Image (cartoon, rainbow, N blue to C red; front, top):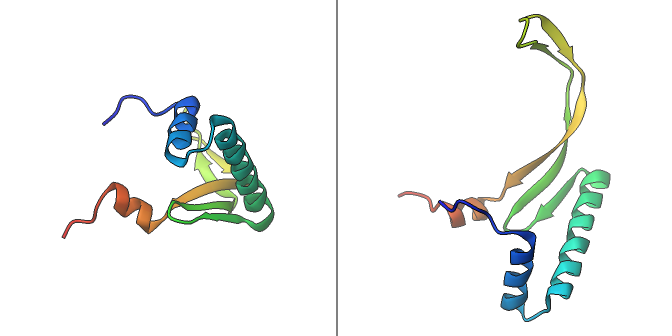
Length: 99
């Protein structure tokens, strides 16, 4: 496994090289794409990225938890969270299914 992931600059450079676009165009595209993903997930509850996965807005209900320091039971308030579910194609591209 690699010790470090690509930096934003390295990602832009790699995409620019593979697509023939310049780094500024790649940067503008990705920033617009990300803003669209955020807005769609916020307003519609989900954003599908074909071949990669789905960004989902999730409602977490109120629940009982435990204070780890004292062991006392506490009520954890309901809240919204954001989840990302990988697409089957993504999982299989990274970890091929065993036969």
